[in-house]
Length: 310
Image (cartoon, rainbow, N blue to C red; front, side, top):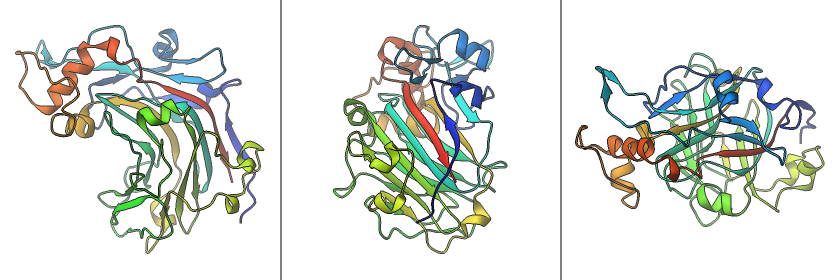
């Protein structure tokens, strides 16, 4: 196995948020969200370091942000945070250690890698899910002519062509449990490890208490990691599709995915919608997220560390 050296350390006890750009443009996935700049995020505690030395990323959980139109303009969404690393990477071993991730109705959090000029330099979704779903979905997005096989992995492969998104879910009996949502949080989270080379992109999931000693010791040895949760390899020329990627952590709400399936797949989530807006799945989601900030108490990231080795 390759011998990895630490090249970047996102340490909440040192300078975690200084290493990120706070994206504050519109949400390309049509979420009920308003990403705020660094000044606003820090001033309001949407991004802060807690007393335990962990990085917290959270939305506004105080104010109402109802759906609909105001003065002919679409009403703003809930203030939230999307941070993107200032440094970019081609290849590496990415270690993400968190004790809590955003969960609950309306949520759509993600920890992912993104190249410039999407999708020509790729997207690697490492932690992603919606609403109250209990399993993590790991997906690659590329331009044409990239497909993957699902061999030698514990997760379940569900799409092979990466042009529309090729992915696997940790939702089968062989995948390690508590990999997303309420289960992740109840178990104090764990560690996601991603190894990206010219030949493959592999992910491992280690529930809290099962992480390899080499990771704990800061000298990760992938040969001891066991079967990956996801093993994206096959006919895809990785170096032609993935390069110069930033680390992104964000909390979105509703939008194309979480909002799109809110009504059909999550009937246990509140389904009321004000009479002033059309009764759609997305509006049911935005009505809940916009109108019930007190119910978004689980919608936060609590990150111990992010390390990048090459």
